[in-house]
Length: 410
Image (cartoon, rainbow, N blue to C red; front, side, top):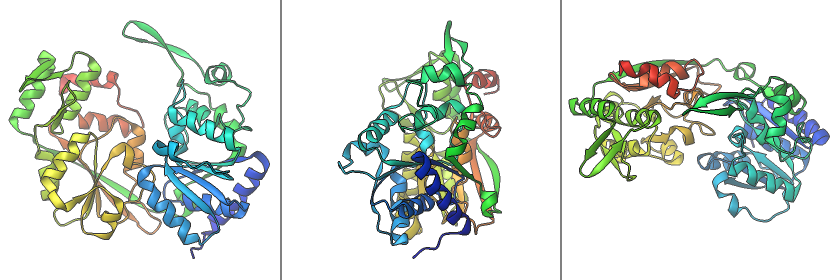
């Protein structure tokens, strides 16, 4: 049976008190500090029986393992958010919302947020929200995370727009000649209002002393790949074997070049083409003696990796943890809720435009016992990835504005 760390015991006691007083608690605990186990400890101490745990698909195995290690009396049902329609109609005592910031889309609520709201309205359970980054891009992301909880601090507002009247500095910005309202400038008071419901804990407080070293490696692509990229920048459309690559807007050009500088492209038809495997071949050669976790951006990039690595590559954690195979994970789906503690290195085949993806995915190897982690970024020579890295490393998403200023250098 697992033993909680001292700080987890303290947070469990605080969490129980907070839920008993307000009906919910937000555990804002940094990655690897044990959010999942702590939340299950709270559930057990509350005397809950039917516990619903909503998470990402790749994290389900770890959640179930944590629950087994507790040897508790919890009747835990763990499922990914995308499968909420399969949740059995039990009387849930407690709902645990893992990676709760994924509910925070605005101004309109996401499908996921609506489903969670209906679930809570129907069963009236106690609620635990979990996230290492509750508002990674904007304080405004808090509203739709908690709006379905009866006693949340913003319950007097019937929708996000009325919430904005008091908590957001709404501005307008021009997009394609139109003035579009921008609701991202949420006020700091949003977090102040959440303070009594929130328990925060950092890796530093938990005693983590790990260092993450990053190395950027630039790989030359085939001359034909650069020719295709240059043609697209000039003509904004290319035809290959009756398929079209269309970049008639700035956003499309940014996306197509992002794909092509890493060796793949998606046509207007939806079909994809591998145009250059140089990056994948370099990764296989460079890390031939290592067990690595590879992060890719686009689906077609996984096909490149499979072609180059063959049966040396897997896509599920159980195989990765129990064999000598390397693992390939899509950045957005793999950046949260999983541990690559068995990897020698993390290798990024490509980079996401999101600063949140950068900070979360690079930290997947961290454990309390591991003092040093090495992350490699594989960029193409003369490609877009280095420019993206400069933005996200400064906690800024890479946007069309950045791209337009960088286009002269591509």
